[in-house]
Image (cartoon, rainbow, N blue to C red; front, side, top):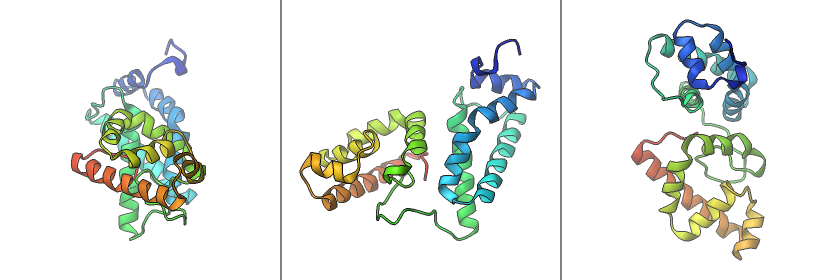
Amino acid sequence: MTMRHELITDAVLVSNYIKGEEAALSVLINRHKQRIYSFIYSKVYDKDVAEDIFQDTFIKVIKTLKRGKYNEEGKFLPWVMRISHNLVIDFFRKNNRMPKFDNNGEFSIFSVLSDSSLNAEHQLIKDQVNFDLQRIIEELPEDQKQVLVMRIYNDMSFKEISDKTGVSINTALGRMRYALINLRKVIDKNNIILTN
C-alpha cells in the first residue's frame, strides 16, 4: 500500500482485500476490533464468549467477502456490527439465555441505558442508524420524545431529566419505557437493525 493505513477508507481496504490483498483485512480488523469486541462483551459479559463471537464474526466477514457477496457501499462497520449482533442473538438462543441487563428496571432496545454504559452504544447508534432513528423519534408523543432525547443524545440521568422537566423520576422512567416500546414497534415493523 502506498498510502498510510490510517488514511485508507474502509471501502478501499475491503476492495483491496477482495482483490487478494490479505493484509487489508488485518488493517480493517485492527481498526475496528475495540469497538466490535466492546459491543459483544457488553452483551455477553464473558471474555471467552466475547472472543469466540468476535472470531466467528470475522470468519463470517471473510466468507462473505470471499464469495463476493458484500455490497454495503462502504458501510463496513455497521455491516460487521450487524453480523456480530446476530451472532450474539444466536448465542443466547442456543443457550436459552437472555442478555444481561442492569437491575434498574429499564426496558431498552439500545442495550442497557444506565449512565455508565452509553459510550459504545451511543456511538453505534449515531454511526449506524442516526437518520432513521431521528425520523422515528420525531413521530413519538412529545413527552416521550423529550425524555428519550435527553437520555440518549444528552446523556442525562433520570434525576437530571426529572429536575429539568419537573416530573418525578418514576414518570420520566415511564415515559422512557413507553418511548422505547413505541420505537421497538416501529423498528420491528420496518425491519430496522439496531443493537439488541
